[in-house]
Amino acid sequence: MTRFIFITGGVVSSLGKGLASAALGALLQARGFKVRLRKLDPYINVDPGTMSPYQHGEVYVTDDGAETDLDLGHYERFTGVGARKSDNVTTGRIYSDVIARERRGDYLGATIQVIPHITDAIKNFVVSDLEDEDFVLCEIGGTVGDIEGLPFLEAIRQLGNELGRERTMFVHLTLVPFIAAAGELKTKPTQHSVKELLSLGIQPDMLVCRSEHPLPDGERRKIAQFCNVRHDSVIPALDAESIYEVPIRYHHEGMDDAVFRHFGISAPEPDLTTWKDIHVRKTKPEGEVSIAVVGKYTGLLDAYKSLSEALDHGGIANNVRVKLNWIDSQIFEGDTPLEYLEDTHGILVPGGFGERGAEGKIAAARFARERGIPYFGICFGMQMAVIEAARNMAGITNANSTEFGATDEPVVGLMTEWLKGNALEKRRNDGDLGGTMRLGAFPCVLTEGSRVHGIYGSAKISERHRHRYEVNTDYKDRLEAAGLKFSGMSPDGVLPEIVEIPEHPWYIGVQFHPELKSKPFDSHPLFTSFIRAAVNQSRLV
Image 1 (cartoon, rainbow, N blue to C red):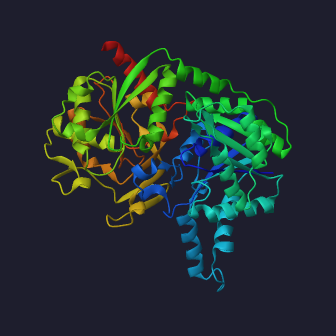
Image 2: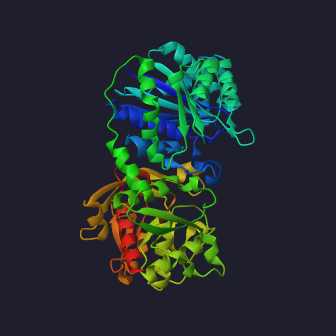
Image 3: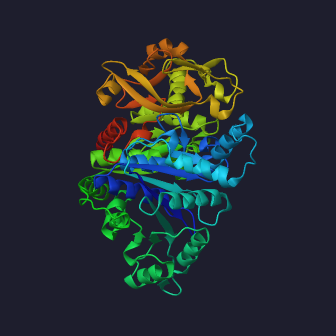
């Protein structure tokens, strides 16, 4: 019997509902249960794929090709359970599906309304595509009181009634602010948030109280009394040294015990050895390396959430602290000297779209290549490395990408077709933005004896993609003759996936996004190897 835990948020956004959901999932897992995590997003966009990273942060991609909310990255990193298309839905997706059904006549002439048609579609999403999971944790985006979230809250209220308390639990994450002038914590915002939730027909079974200061027992009892929640189900959630300490903290505060108490089930104590080891390695490393991330969206680091976490995982695997230096690539298009990067132990150029900042990324790739600094190019970062190699190693001075306009030397160009399984996918330049993407997991064949073959320890790999443009294989022979080796290709030999410079200490570009598959307890081999190369570089500096 699958039990459902619904996580809502109140008072303010960005309290960490996604992290709380992921940490609770990890705790339930550690106690022997099978979990699945889902996210309901109230915004009207069909998916976050066309949204600016400055507005929404990173777009996370699943194996089956869904563009999802970044919280699904937290879910995967904390539990190791692969997310699917059926784990993230938006208001836009729900409405477009209902409207499509209405156009087909599926409703037999009925008047389509929010209740029951929209709420039924949400409920169907929550309970569909399940196997033998013991718990499904379902996070509702936004905060209680947002007009956009009302259909989702009504849907989970109905589910609570239909499934009964023995199969449903409501967890509410809220803020308990500290007023410095008064020198005390204030519980009133939490009370009002719960009141808002109660007005929608939902009584929370657990309150997770975010605070910068310890929550005294008196305040916990006050919150419990006024919010009609058990005292031991009011869980303090203080700021942690590392996000990987959160499962340990929540267990200490009794969060998982409160879940089992609610459902009336018993479970063995969790084995948190792995999380304790990760926390020690994260907070007490044996050394430090400096990595320069030369990107486009450095003003909002949530745009690179999986990337920064994957670099952390590489540091955990090598028992070093990874100090990240976020640099806007545009500064290298002016008079700023590239020697600005000299003290760094590794340079990483991440993914991105558009011409802005591209020449700065090319300059960073050249600097890393010529100075022997470990270089890691991901997606767009690989394409810029190839353009740089074409210009300065192969002598193709006009080498460029068609993404930036017409060019005589299209070293990087728009993909119009590619294989997905046994099917040939075709796209047009003027199609919907979401439709022109190569999305999801694709296989890759590695060249025997190459550096990446040694890193992976395998000749065949599968990695996740999210891009429209691809390195042009027509230039492969000229680039290889100049010293840039194509060490990973699609199985049909058409699409370049990995390039490397064998003579360089560590110079690798990949068309896919390896950061999406990295976990704190299982660092991605490329990030483990990159940070190890940075450690070696730090000893030379």
